[in-house]
Amino acid sequence: MNDTTSGRSVQAGKPDARHFPRYRVDVRVLVKARREQGVAELRGRSTDISEGGMGVTLGGELNAGEVVEMEFTLPLTRQPLHLRAAVRRRNGLNYGLEFLTLSPLQRDAIKRLCDPLIAID
Image (cartoon, rainbow, N blue to C red):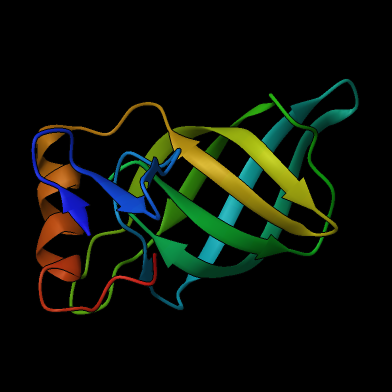
C-alpha cells in the first residue's frame, strides 16, 4: 500500500524508512573514496536504484558515513552520471549509498529509467 501524500511505501500499518521505491538495475559502478594514501577506486555493480540512492556491491571496503564520488551509466543513455553519495548502510561488500548531489537532469534520467519498472519494495 502506498501513502501518496508522503511518497513512502507502507506495509502492515508501518511507514517504510525509504523515501523512494527501489528498482532492480544492474549497471557497472565506479566509486572513488578519498583516503590518506590518495584516492581509492572501487569497481562494482549496482543491485538497485531509486531517486534517492543506489544499492551496490563493490570490490573493496567503504565506511558508514563516508562520502564518495560515483560514476555510472544508466541503460539506454550515453553520458555517465557523476555525483556524490554518502554510505548509509553496509553488509559485507554490499552498500546502500544515498545520492547527495543529484541535479534535476540526473533525477529526471533516473525517474525515466524507473517509470516502466516494477518496484522491489
